Length: 477
Image 1 (cartoon, helix red, strand yellow):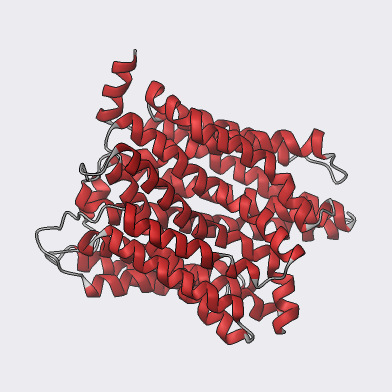
Image 2: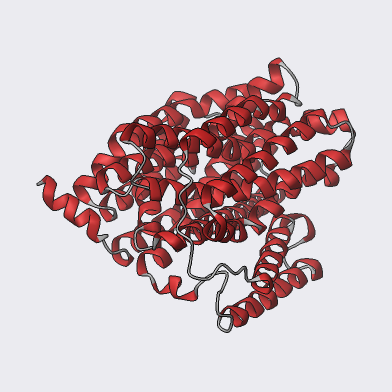
């Protein structure tokens, strides 16, 4: 990757960020438009969930396979394939006039999005090998990952409010075309092939099936009951398939996931931190949006603007400060500080009253969460990828994305269930509807704070500073 110029690397990074932003936006932009989609296409309450679930299932299920395919056949090639699938599926979503067509196109969207997400991080890591530049590039990339979700809330409100729900999908067409052209011109085509190019078919089938069953059980856990036969049966089947996958990986000569990767201390620890952090972040994006709408009576557009200060803070930190902190202090201290500030933000949300004033009760928490996310995501991604060889960066990237995806999905399902349970308890003890809702969200925010606090302890005690950053740090003193 050394044949690409310095300016070319940064232009390539912009291309990767634009492609990733499309994927990240799609996880939240649709939620704002769900009421309009339901009315337009005649969805029932239960069938409407499949507009989200179809995407989540294929996205979560194919991240690992997408990363491994990138390692075997070229990261740029897979990025382009995934981008084309996602863009074409977005167009079909936008012109859908039936429930079946929309849900089927959403499933293809998730598949394409999984491929793009799985190889984008590995492309970025291979583009930037010098520690200071890599930290700076990761800051930009991290903002897209951390801030894109809340930007989607604002964009979804704008497009749905001023146009209609079709445009939340159709807007991807010009962006996808532009990214495809830029990727052809800017992303390096060089590819370090492994010694043996062999796809572990049985491993791919078992782990993909396991992930899809687990995701399906999690996203439907609140509706069907966590102790229901369906949920327990699906989770049991997922664990059996996971066991089969591990048995296959220990025996095949070219495994889908080399199990030795999990012996890498930073990769293993950073993935646990990522799961805990994603659980907390999903609570911020989704549950605080519900709190603002259902308790405080905000419109979707007002909810989007409520997230704007946090997005701006995240952008400033990600684009200019986060990289300097990592270069100056390494990954452990900035990560621990960022997660600590986010913990404080959740604690503030957990005390916001029913008649909360935005400036006094909401904005301080949003700012703290924006600062925390702006500081934390860069070092946790750097930690996860720091010890991985270039020819395994795709599967490592897939593991990182899968950890975030599963942590976020499981965390949101558990916290949403907790919020609903506490709300019902509050109603039975005589609280009015708004007070009961607030009580439920407060409980969820407290658990999110606990999740972030545990991640702080792991960051402080479980991570090792990468040698490259230690060298960069000593050189900057």
